[in-house]
Image (cartoon, rainbow, N blue to C red; front, top):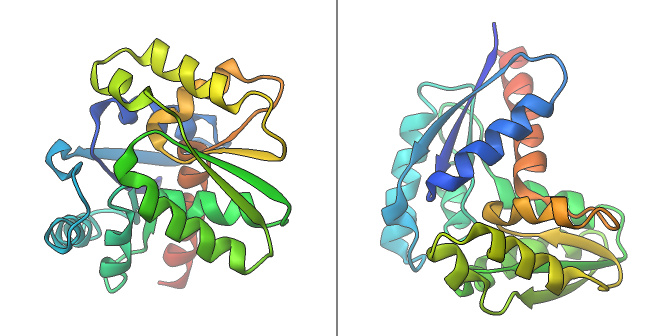
Length: 209
């Protein structure tokens, strides 16, 4: 029976990114369901995080694992760790992968509201390995995303990343499309790593039942 991963998104444009990541995994035994709540893409206040956590709990009733794909409200995943199935924040899996071997890690983000949660999750991961973090706001990119100009959005991200020393990390799921413009230094992206981490967690949980 295929594993089912329920994805909680705040942007419809993230759905194909995660579908592509799932299809790239070997075996073909993974099914994603997508639940998009754009109203959650706001300041990560306690009320917002509790609202997201309630949705995560609900999704855990109908999936093998749940993946929160929005960096801005990533902290909501911590409020849902008592759910019926594993609940992961996609950028948390990304932070673990990016810092695992230490060294210099360049973390790019586009939405100003995601700086604090992104910094927190990457600093926690880096503290365990001694990795050195450098956070970069991609100036002007978020306005392009909100205007629906994804080509310009991705181009601005790739331009900002070009020439940075060390491991390049695109901290928001919506940034993943820029990876195609960076073949000389392929970055780590949220969809690819998040889906893989969720699949592992789902398989482990299923095997333990």
